[in-house]
Every structure is written in structure tokens, then in C-alpha cells.
Image (cartoon, rainbow, N blue to C red; front, side):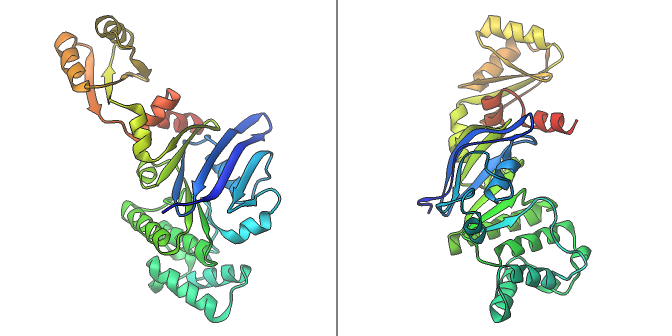
Length: 315
């Protein structure tokens, strides 16, 4: 299992003009770990990814990959990492095999060594029967698998994946993550993933949660959920202010307003739900009770919903 640090980030800050994309982010990724950067659009995770991939200059702070600085030793870092970008990078006029072969040439691979690596990865990713198909004729999910095969050709020690499930259906996503875990177990490769999908984040050993360029939470999914504690209660209502006021007065609780809903964190939430419905059910449109999820962790840390940020970014 994970040992020393494969990736170390300290006080990392980055600005695009007047926009502060990263605000003093610090964390370590242990060797052999699957580490996730979870955040909505505009959270800074892609900027951080690009800095680690040596595609953006380091403005402030430090970042190292297996002890090599991304600022002073970028060539050494590039030899150690494999990268799969969110945007497609396949040549759609070439076959699957040709895409892999020409990518291998860029890393100095050739002959039987290159052929052996291509065959092994095509088998592992379920692409052996597609080797002679044009990349442009593949589904989005199959193209994504070819992208990942390219990033693994030179047997990197650190694999960087930007939104790896883009274009994958649920079954293909499951297969991808099964392969990533097998890869980690068989080769000890360290994997860093950026994602906005809670299901994908749950599959990581540890997570760093980003919001507006700040690190707001870090730990395993279980540790992050435990940091919320108790139960999470969400109440849908058409009378937000009135119901919130009565809850404050009767139960001495301070509900959090989220859109047209009220949210409460507390122990023994089922007892509160029972008491609320007995005392004041008229303004309750619906009520849900559950143990904390990663979405609840994000709300707890930031005061707003995860998807609210995505919607705001898109608009």
C-alpha cells in the first residue's frame, strides 16, 4: 500500500489575470495511491492538473513528482508521468494501432518492445479486436480507452487522468476503474484523477475537495463523511422563512438554506423528523434523512451545493 510521497504540492497559487484559480493549495499523494481531485467547474482542479502535467508554469508555491520539481526539472517529470486529457487527443484518421504506435515513437519505443506494450494494453482495455479500426469510427467510450492506453505505453510511475469517465457509459466506467485498480495492484503506479462525479470520487483512496481554488477538505471518503457527523436532513418547503423560523424557535436548531430547501445536520435525525412532522407538517413538501454523502461533505465545507456551482459556471 501507499508509502512515501509520489506527488507533493505546497502553497500552490495560480492566477489568470484578475482571476485567482488556486489559493495556497497543499497536499501529498502517497506512492501507490489512487488520489482524487474533486470539485465543480471553476474549482481549480484542472489548473492544478495542468501544473502537475508541466503544461502551465509554476507561479507560486512548489510541486514535485517523485522528488522532481515541475518548475526546475520538467523533462524529468514528463518521463515519469502518463497523461490522459479531458479533451480528445486521438488522430481520428489513423487506426487504433497506428495511434498507439506513433505515440510510442514519441517516447523512444520501437520494434518488439513497442508491439508487446501495445498488445498488452489493447488486451487489458478490451480493444484487441479494434486495433485496425479507425479511431474516428469508435464510440466515445472506446476512444477514451485508447486515450488511456496511450498514456500507459511508456509504463509511467504516475498516471494523471483528467475527468477519465468522460464519454463512458456506466458499464464502461466500472470496467475502467476495475482496470485502474488492477494496474495499481500489479505495477504500483500512482494515479491522480480529477473528477466532478461523486461515484468516481468514492472509488479513490483519498480525496482533495476544491472550491474556488481553495482546498476545503482532504481525506479518505470515509474520513470526509465522518467529519460531518450525525444525520443529514433535507426539507423541501414552499415557506422557507416561516418554517426555518419555527424550527429555530421550537427546536433551537439553525437550519441552513439551500435553494427552496432547508438542511440540518444532527445526531438521531429520525427523532427530529418524527417531532417535526407531529408539530409542523403543513409547510413540509418532502423530507429526506440519510447518513452523510460526499455531496453533504461539500455542502458542510462550503455552505452551498456542489451542482449549484456547476450551474453558475455554465450560466
